[in-house]
Image (cartoon, rainbow, N blue to C red; front, side, top):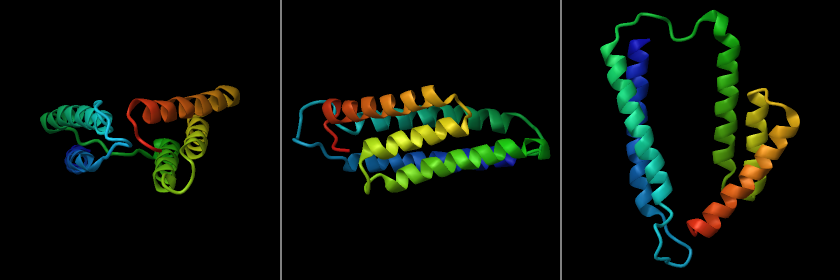
Length: 144
């Protein structure tokens, strides 16, 4: 498991570096004087990189020979794969459908994968999608 953790952390660091570099290509709607659309993604990428470096340090420091996935946890692995599939579907549909629609559906599906109650799942998925849309349109001047 140690080799898997180190490998995953190094790959994630590489992906974060590439994504951080891509944030320099963001443009604003009207050339506003604010912090710009790249501020939030850069902040999140930096936080992911910091936690990843900490995890990498602890992975190298510990010497564990446990397996990555146990047979007893096969249901959790399936839930993880469904979770990743929903996120990948959301990302792949971003430019084709309206943001609020795909964000609401994706959030609802993620709530179902996590086995949350139905009514709060609907409220959270729609409410959070509308709030995120409003923040990015009005706050960061990004057209979604």
